[in-house]
Length: 210
Image (cartoon, rainbow, N blue to C red):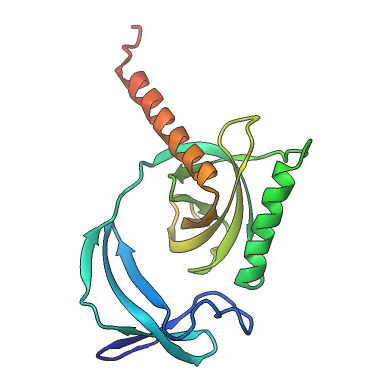
């Protein structure tokens, strides 16, 4: 947010956009604005009043702020196969790269990439892992995730939402939220997380031999 008044908010888009890419946000377009942190959030509704300058949208807000509790998806700490490319270019081009990668993965006899495995914290809504070079807040990355060996990878775009120093010196823990992911792939992640949680619970209940 770059400015505010009694009945409006000026919102600065965090992504690089070309001329014409704000076309869905035409004056009069109805919007729901959300802000979330630590499982709690606030939201309001309004409509686009116009564009103040490049990348800045003015929204008229007449509804009072409403507090809500975010639905928290189950999460697990687990190693998965991971490849990622940090976002370079405009939002439209990043989305096009994601769509192209999906086509390549779904092509008949497509050659599946090999994956280095690394520890992550994973849910159906996002992922956390360590970077050597810290990205920027709102930076978008293209991710490929192999949930278990020899299974088709999940392809998603994810946005950096928070950063903090990792336990290991020289690394940054980065929390990312999926912005573009097929529902089937998101469902796969949710099933995978649930199944691993069940296995971990069963292992914890199994008595060990002395």
